[in-house]
Image (cartoon, rainbow, N blue to C red):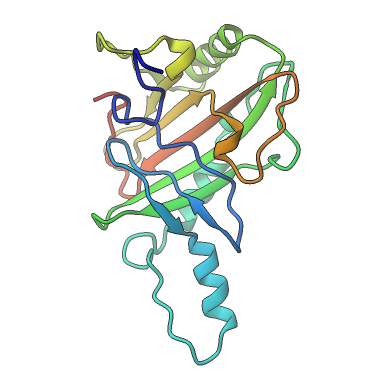
Length: 211
């Protein structure tokens, strides 16, 4: 997109780069916190599996410093009702039917938590965005407008909402990813694929939608 970058790029860092589903035995793109770039990182679950299964080997868990103890918060995020909310003609694509969670510890030592879900819908992007504007508001999420003159159209950059305050702040994004950013690639069929992603700092500090 030449006029304005798509969500997850530098101009709109509030959306963590679109994230493949987690697999125990794969290297995946983990979501980064807003305003930071993402690198290919070894899945924390892979490290956990190897550490438990290889006797006599010493492995360093790259997430131990700041992702330790994140499981309760991730469980809470994955059970949020907004992730189950969907338009009447939407359904999760095969192979991507569950909420997926991740904790990303980048080079700063801070941790970014995420819970995401994919859907495919025969409704238009406008109808999908209208649905979540209403559904998120009803669930207590605040729509954060992008006032930048360089902003992309809403059907390109998606929506961003915020909820909570210092200690329990979260963001919710609705975006339209391409299938090749996931493994395995989802089959959206003839519908429009979209992603719901809830993100939060591990300490619950507020994160702006737009910078």
